Every structure is written in structure tokens, then in C-alpha cells.
Image (tube, rainbow, N blue to C red; front, side, top):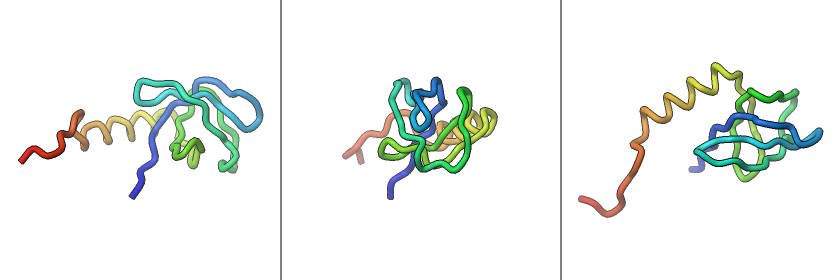
Length: 80
């Protein structure tokens, strides 16, 4: 199962692209899979370079905080 990543839209790079910030890195994503407008400050769920869903700033921060509290910062493999 693949999970999308949460990222904040920093800048629009044209009608179908954006620079987003998530997990302490910037990356370019396509907005072609979205059916509505996106503005800087919105949050998106991204997977494989595509924004698949849009969240408000409040929803994005809440989802990020929930995910951080549910998943340990560092997971070690093979311990146990």
C-alpha cells in the first residue's frame, strides 16, 4: 500500500505545476490530476509527482500533525 505525502504549495509554476514543501524538502509536482484551483498556502496530497487532492492550510497542518503523532520519527528495521 502506498500512502500519499502531505506538502504545502509554495509557488505556482504555470497552469499545471507547483513547487511544494514537505518532509523538509522542495519539489515540483503536477497539478493536472486536480479538478479545482490551487493557491500558495494550500496543502496537497502528492504521490509519484502528482497532486491528487487539495487541503486547506488548517486541514493540511492538522493532517501533518496527526501523521507525525501516529508514526515514530525513526523506524528501525530488524530490531527485535
